Image (cartoon, each protein chain N blue to C red):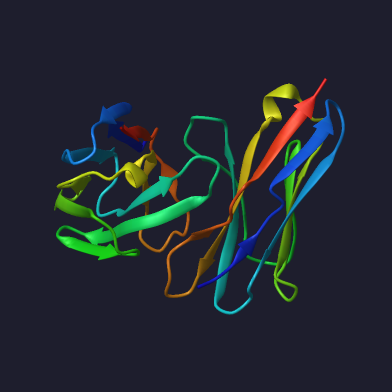
Length: 112
Length: 109
């Protein structure tokens, strides 16, 4: 069966520090991968998606970036965090063409 | 962009029935999903509708009308553990999922 992992589960970082969040999927090949952010009390905002290794599409301009160095690994990064980057970051996977997404456990990021 | 609308909050009593509505723009529609999200946790899949009508899964049912751009999630025999946010998400052709803002449901004893 397929599983999706995210780490760390929680993170507290100062403004201006770098960020690296990791997401890995097991039990499937060539999934579509997604990064979402959910600010407190708000809906899910799609940040990035990837249909294959090295293929990244950005949905919103921001100081975040994403990379997919391996088929089942998706990384969210920032060089300098802003206060507004605080939120709940969710990684999701989807079988290409299946139209159903499965979410990882999420990373709660607090930028101070 | 595509707009997905849901009520922000709802309150219901344990054992009752509650209906959570979702409306969306119909152009390019390619399926609608409902997810449940407990506070501090990731969303989990509840249901999928791509054709008109009612899909029933135990205490939960989801209805879709494509011509009206309308769906609802029906929760029967409410339990305290059903207190959560319910997210409506729509897949559009050539685009990624668009999530609604979510409806926070509080079930009271």
